[in-house]
Image (cartoon, rainbow, N blue to C red; front, side, top):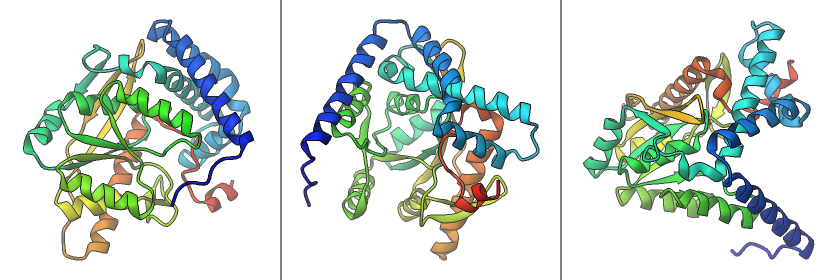
Length: 303
């Protein structure tokens, strides 16, 4: 079914937002990456704490690290705003943040090369770490035929610009939604193409599994399709280095159980993914996307 035509006012708003996006991107591309990145960090550190996402980030940090002092939490809050501001400001310049451009080093690249040479699809999972956009560039650079899942922007004009920006460094996007999206996902895997998932977000109706000592709901699709296709469940992460440089780490695959009890096997796989994501966050907490309401409502109410 076709999407309903937007009202004149909404369409005008969308177009103005897209114009602002174009203007900001054009200005950013006039300057070196380091300067643009630093400007984003400076701005978000000063303004972020006063926003609604700032309140969410603070509460998330309290949930994740209940034993930390208030000063430690404040330092983490400032540091995560610095990283998030840099990430947002770096987006128009993502085509410069690639292994070929010398700004991204890849640890464990041989694992990606092996996937590319195998001809079989893999399920690549990660979280919103550092500047997560550079991970796709590392996958493409290793020759892995892959589609990157993402949530389409509400503004269709901005969404097109996001897709075009990512296409500049070879990324093919895939926004699964409903039954049609599920069928497209299966066709992609049957064609031997790998698929990436950001598996660190809240997913209503997902699989219940532990995360920082609490039960959260996580998408089960990555584990489910990995089991269905006998595919590798390949975790990856991104770390921020000085001067708008990055390290992509391709960790050993997450082993999946295949006992014949599909429900239990999926639950075990999701729990293993949550363990991986939590370990990455604990290792470099300032580089995670803290502004998302990851935990269930009762966790926030308890604060």
